[in-house]
Length: 117
Image (tube, rainbow, N blue to C red; front, side, top):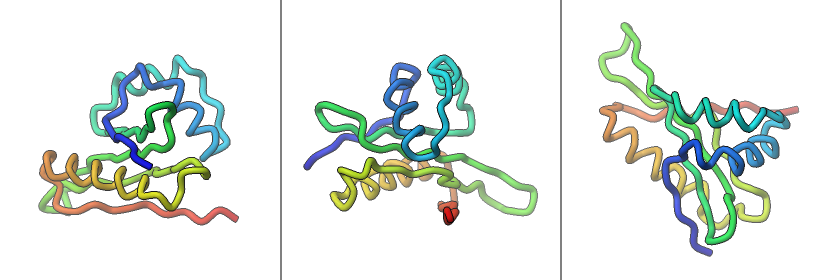
């Protein structure tokens, strides 16, 4: 299975809203997704797609602090639709995040992890 990963744009609001709902159980209005994707100054959202559908996404924030010498990128969300797990989609999303972090001068990438339960 092959997929492409690219930075999401407001035109991807529909597929991202669907995936976000699957992952977080949140139903955000489509217009809010479009607005958020238009103004993501410090955040980058990456979308994984097959030829036919969106199958995963990752959100990455570039952060700076007076306590750190270099900025870093924090992966706040990464999700792959259940039917596509174990096929390298998350790895492809993380490669896109890594390239983004390097271009933005980040010294490291931190992955946020929350256990549901």
